[in-house]
Length: 423
Image (cartoon, rainbow, N blue to C red):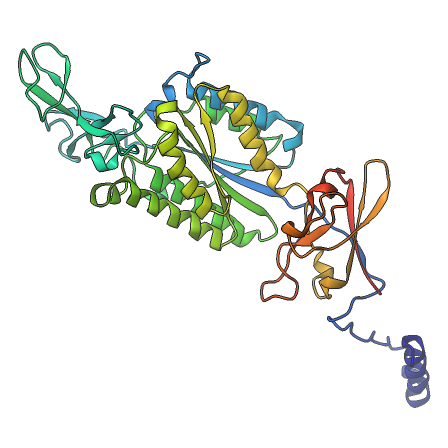
């Protein structure tokens, strides 16, 4: 018996049995979630991209590039173009910088003294000959061929020297160090409490970038952990948003991780991998961008790729200081922005239906409606005809929440996406 006859028959029996109560509304039979409601149709809204960006502002960011500007000048130029681009409209952005400092504690010390009473004077060195990191022992150098040379100065001449060697012609070699409590090392110090929305808050973000203090060392672990923790908290309360973290740095970790002393740099990178993996488990991917001089580039790339892979983004964006740093950084920022292009939220009123029976149609700029074929994953997308896929298999244990267009369909720059049910 057809649905219309069932309802008509039910109505007739109600009138006969209840008389005056025949005006009561007749409930509509529930839709079997294994099917689709043939009357259902809705517009799917694009996913909102939320980017938590954490920038390395250590002293090495003041080093010059081949173009004659500093690394931080290049970051500022690229971010200005990124934030003011009309294509970034509606993007939500959060910013953080590292290191952060306790300004009540001196930054540096010498001869083991100068940090009292709240801090200790820690000797430090530079990785030589290739450079690329602060160190107290050679295992912390990113390139295995480097040795950690402790920093000092000859008391008689002021010339640099190594306190572990007798290399001062005049006077003793006085060690140079940093005050241990000057750099903030707690994750909570790097949580990001505020978000801005572009283009309205672009100027706020630019002011934060242009006024950042370029100084100090590289406490990557608490800074990255703070950004991932902030992004995860946002994702838990806004599960329809696409939330990502961007770590932009010009160096490997140099302090604020005990693993640097116990296991060297590889152990510290493992800790960053764990942070990235924890974020990915909650649906937050981590992108990594690195700016390095050619001698540092190869070794640093290995480490940063490892973090990006753990964060679900494959490999890091690496920029050489011999290249056009600002232009390549902008390309990297735009690549991050594009991750949510052509991702749409499944309308909530359609979530109870069998998604394998969804009809997905896009409307192009010219007004043409194109029905898309569904694929099982991005790997199955047709390079010519495109199509769409879900973020999770509708038949699997994890509910699908996104409709994602294949590259060929995304390239059509759809103006709208409609979903309906296949009868």
